[in-house]
Every structure is written in structure tokens, then in C-alpha cells.
Amino acid sequence: MSLLKLAPPDLDDDVAVSSIVLTPPTTRGRRQRRFRVPRLVRRIVGPLAVIILWQVVCSAGVFTSYEVASPLAVFDAGRQLAEQGVLLPNLLISLRRVAEGLGLGIAIGVVLAVLSGLFRIGEDLLDPVVQAARAVPILGLVPLAIIWFGVGEMPKIFLIALGSTFAIYINTFAGIRGVDTKLVEAGETFGLDRWGLVRKIILPGALPNFLIGLRLALVGSWLIVIVAEEINAQSGLGYLIMQAQTTDRTDIMMMGLAIYAILGLLADAMVRLLERRLLTWRRGFSGA
Amino acid sequence: MTMRTQVTPLESPTGVAVVARNVQRTFNGRDVLRDVNLTVEADQFVALLGRSGTGKSTLLRILGGLDPEYEGQVLVPERRAVVFQEARLVPWLRVLSNVLLGLGSRGENRATLRDRGLEALDEVGLAQHAQDWPLTLSGGEAQRVALARALVREPQLMLLDEPFGALDALTRIKMHALLQRLCARHHPAVLLVTHDVDEAILLADRIVVLVDGAIAFDAEVDIAKPRNRGDASFLALRSRLLGELGVNESAPTPPVPSPHLVRPGSAVLTVPAQSFDSLPNDFDNKEIFQ
Image 1 (spheres, rainbow over the protein chains, first blue to last red):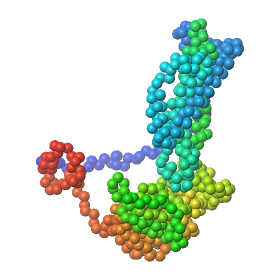
Image 2 (image 1 turned 90 degrees about the horizontal axis):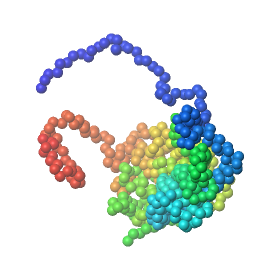
Image 3 (image 1 turned 30 degrees about the vertical axis):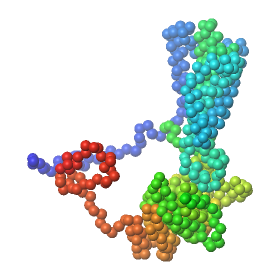
Image 4 (image 1 turned 90 degrees about the vertical axis):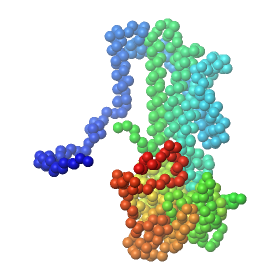
């Protein structure tokens, strides 16, 4: 055992009476902004910057116009096709295919999810089948779809419907099963019958998840329609892109892709709007 | 052998709101309620006291018709309402729609119902929040909406499952006063499940203590209202009830020695019998406690 040497604490007068600097309790990044840029403007800045960069790179001659068409060339190609009356009809046909396929997919997905979500027997019978079918790559079904439905509209709508069904089913099912059992119990004690529980508690409770499924389904259907139209079609945006490839028109190919991108953005904005209207009761954190 | 009786309307003119006879409830072989007998008169405010896990919420759930898996006989009125510890408001229904949840299927006039709902909200002081979303309310406000949702049904039996347990102390005092006012006006039979002895003495006409699933104490509270926590009779009943619950306030708590003050060899440590299973095979206490 060693002895400890004890000494009085060092008393430095300067330290003992030094004053504390006081500032208002603002955290960095949480400061009140005097001027707020509108949300829409802020969201457009990113894509706009990409387009400008793209134009600058092309104007600088980094790529040949065969490799990458500049944004101006892409816009010009779009204008020409529109003037020839080619763009709009093909665009409308693609839109229609997506709308029909998606509508069918949503209907089937919701019905299946409700059956499996509400009834244990439904889950046991349906869920394994849907899960197994989901594991099949949809684009691998293109040749089969042609054998089953020929080369008309049916195979395209079938493929889109199939793709969106899974996204809707998985998310809606999870939403139904995720509804707080305490709310269901409260509904029961206050006299809601089975149908009342489904209508007032279970389905509205599953709505946020359904909307997530809807977003995924929208993205998926655009993916499927372009592939379906490139493989077997005489019309549609995908068909235009394929035609452009045979004639080496990079500008038209990229125009088709740009339209897909814009439509994707619009679809996403639509779902956001839907969310804002349907989910006003939520007051979650939505970014600083 | 199971005698299972569904919750049925009570056809009794005798002014009795709850009859429970030989009620038993088993969860996975564990007896949660053992032969409980309880009669609650209409207009009576009964506090059901007990530590956590003694079966008081189980009994309340049985009386509320939320648990059909019991044995014995239970009779309750048809008009009954439950208030849970969490307000359990449906977040996507506005406050008024929450109050009216499940009503209106009996063909009542919409406007009449709406007026009744607003009246109930007014009674708990929240009429101005009728069109708000539940998530914008504070905890106390949400619980007041839950009370309004119970009241609007004009219940003959109110089942309160630790309704103030999640509220802060100041809000709880206000809620006690509100509950007393509402009971004085509407005269329902009340069964309040709580582990708060003071709350029970403050509010109840009668206190029932549940210990290990059986009724261990059952007596009327004969202290004049309004009751005061400082009164001798209040304190006497308080320490009596705490004793029933196995809490002895007057005995000094044995000092807990800090681990590093225990000299080797001076402490006798025992391991609860059932936890020997979880000890590693090579566990040798000599090595550790020498």
C-alpha cells in the first residue's frame, strides 16, 4: 500500500471568477429563416442543374451526337415528332395501357390483400400463391404472354396488371395486419360490427401502406410498358424508341426516355397529392 | 366442464350493475383469476386495487365483454362503456366522430346524434375541439375525449382501466375532479381499475383489493366527501390498503450496500432455484466469491 499525497485544490483566481459567455439557444441549422424559397422551386433546382450540365457537356463536344444527344436536340426531336402528329397518339396509347393495367392490378391486389388480411383462411390459401408468383420475373413472362394473348393490347395490360398487383398486395396486406389491435378492440367495445370495423378502422388504417404500394406499382408499370412495347408493338412510346434505334436516331430515343422520366415525376406528384389529401390526420416529421 | 356464459343483459330490478360468480381465468395454465365473486350496485363507484399482474385488468376485460374465455357466471348491463389507459382514439376520425364511434347504426337521427356528441364534449370542456384530429390533442385532452365517448352512450356501467395512469400528476388531479363531477351528474356504476391507492380512496365508494387473482379485501369507504389526503382517516385507510398490497411504509428500508464495500467472504449470495438452469455448466461459485 502506497501513501497518497494530499494537497489543497489549486485555486486560480482567474479561473474561479471567469465569466460565462451567454448566447441565445439556437442550434445550428435550426435557425429561423427570414425568407423561404417555395418548395416547388427547390424541388426543380436539382433536375434543372442536371439538364444544364448535360447541355454544357454536349456543347463542349465530349460526346458525338450519335452517342448522346444534347437536351436541345432532344427537345427538337420531340417538337418534330409532335408536328408530324406521331408523338401524341403514341404517348396516349402508352398512357392508356398503363392506366388499364394499373387499374386492373390495383383492383386485384386490393381484393387479394383484403381477403388475406382479414381472414386467416384467406391468408393461408392466397398468400403462398401470391408470394410464389411474385418470385417469377415478370419480364420473363413476355414470351408466354404473347402465346396466351397474341400480339394485341391484352399481353401488355396483363403484364402491367400482374406487376402492379404484387406491389399493391404486399403493402396493403402489411397495412391491414399492422393496424393497431387496441383500436380494433376499442371499436368492438363501442359497438362497431364487423363491417363497421373494416370500413372505419382497418381499411383507413391500411391506407398509408396502400399508397406506398401505389407508388411502387406506378414505377413498375412504366418499366413494364416500355419493355412490352419494345418487344412486340406497333405503337406506343417504347415502339418509337425501338424505331429510333433502327434509324440511329439517338435524339428520339432519349426523347422517349425523357418523357418516361417526366411522366414518372407527374405520377409521383399525383400520389403525393393524394397522400396529402387522404392522410391529413398524420402529423409526422416531414423534414426540416 | 367449462361453464362459459356470454355477457348478457341483466334482467334485474334490484339495482345491481355487475354480478360475477366464481369467475376463473387461466392463461397458459396460470390462474390469473381464482374464484372471484363480485356484485356492484347501480350508482356505486368501486375501485379495484392491485399490483400489476394480479388480474384486475383481466377482470375488467371480462366485464367489458372483451374476453369470452372465462369460467363462471358474469352479468353486466347492456349499456356499458370502457375507458382504457391509452385514449385509443381513432387517429383518422375527427374528435366528434370518435365520440360517436359505433353509434348511429341503430337508425338514430344524424343531427340528434351530433348534438349528443357535442354535448358530451362540452361536458369534458372540449366542444371547441370537435373537428380537430386526435393527434393534435394533449394526453389529458385525448383522455377527456375518451371519457366523452364513454358518456355519450349513457352507460349503466363505466369500466375504467387505469385511465389516468399515463397522465402527469397535475392533469390527473384535474381529471379526478372531472370524473367526480360526471359521476355525480350521470350516476353510472363505475369499476375503476388502478394501482394508485390514493386515487382509489379519493374517488371510490368501495374498494376491492385483488391479490394473486383473488379478492383479499372488500370494504366501503366511509370517509365523508370531499376527501382530503391529509386526514387521519384517509391515512389510516391508506396504510391499511398498502398493507393488503404487501407494502409496509413504516418499516425502514434496509440499506443497500455498495458492491465495493462488501469484503470478500462476508456476503452470502444465493441464486433463486429456477435460475440454476440458466447458469453455465462450468459455473463455480468458489472461484468468484472467495
